[in-house]
Length: 88
Image (cartoon, rainbow, N blue to C red; front, side, top):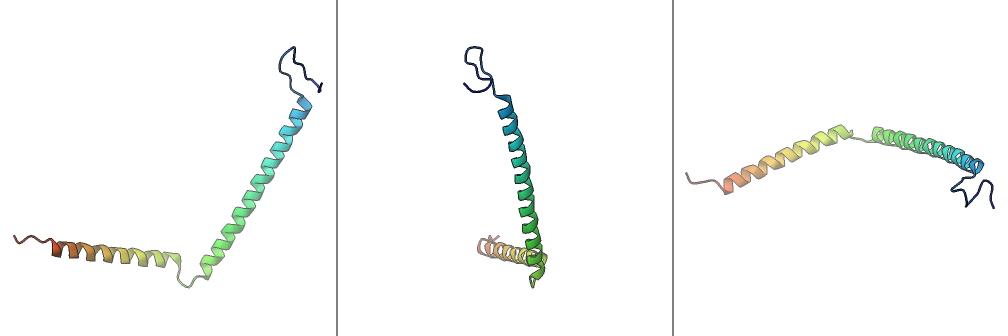
């Protein structure tokens, strides 16, 4: 039988093994979190440098697209009104 194991008196856990597993799991979680932080930092840095290298900033592109959408919406509304205008 393994250390601290007994089927007659109930469920007993090998505490040194459980403690070691918990410690290793904690260390692994910390290393995983550190790795994920490093990956996020690298991606953010690469994204920032890519945005800086663009000829047209993203804000200008967003304003241009919004203006185009407003113009298209107005044109569609005007065309619909012209088509469905009542003779009254």
